[in-house]
Length: 264
Image (cartoon, rainbow, N blue to C red):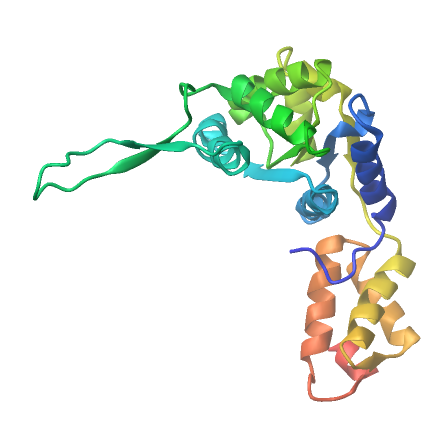
């Protein structure tokens, strides 16, 4: 989950937003986040998606599990195309119309046979470009076992970049998994992606991440207790949420969080 206050990653979030503003060709339009479990890779994907939505971009949020490309071509892209085509898809009668027999209808795009990934992305980004916006594809848990889908997606994204389409890609995975993908000769566009290795957060930032949500929720905590709680996390982002959550829960009916609460 995205924490109530994200600390230590502000520059990375702003960099991704700037890449959307800078237009096709901006290096950050292909971005990878790597790091150990619990360092906030998925949180960074959430933040990238939020940066896109604030700019009016459409977002497809996925995970590198079996059937990734099928879900893109049969679920996400057809839905978005149906919503944004002008005029919208017509309806076609696909069932019987004799009395007593049920009638069924199917949405179809006039004159458009079912298209593959590249054609659908080209059509959607073309529509969005006319409105001054674009499409972000976000893929979590990237690893080589799904390299077939990622190869196909990567080839299409690379073509879209060459054609200067309003498309961006952001992915996340464990360091070993991402390294394996980067060694794959077919997934070449990932080698040129902006790669960010997420590490610990400074303890000063951690203390702020604990103090601000407490105060914004109507309670208080002394600076010393914030520093103690921060030290216990070691700067590990998952522990920031875990420690903060449990410090809050010790005596939630009391206005002030005490040293005893933190020690517990």
